Length: 158
Image (cartoon, rainbow, N blue to C red; front, side, top):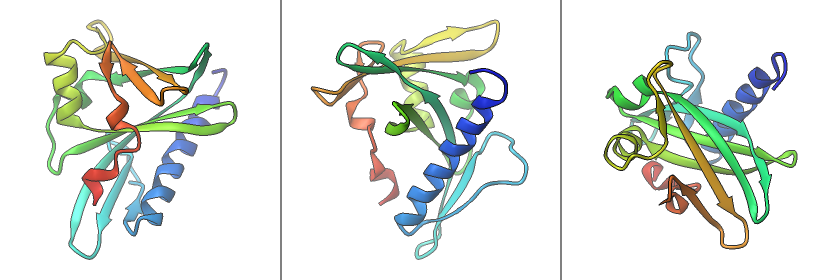
């Protein structure tokens, strides 16, 4: 993206996820200082608190769907926090929100370190996840791993 457009897209993704939490009766707040958590959410009735990291990207059209490339700092994936961090990987395509993946930090860490998902850039200390989505099959793959069950998987929040 040119200029600051990626900042607008990132903020839009963050606000989209905040709206989704509010619609599911979770209280949500964006921290004043971003130290790695994009959103804090609280289930007020039971006091459950979660940290949210949102990564937003514009998808690329493919023959049977679209793909997206997420770049995530490896330290966000490898460093446990309490309460645990949950990643929301959003894809915007054809001027609409088409999909997102919800993956807990530990699960993403296991994918990267145990299953060789994504590609590490040791120079930049990042992990690149290339996800392809087949619209016809309603399936998603990342490094030949099935990511379909992470699509809009709100089970961690129920």
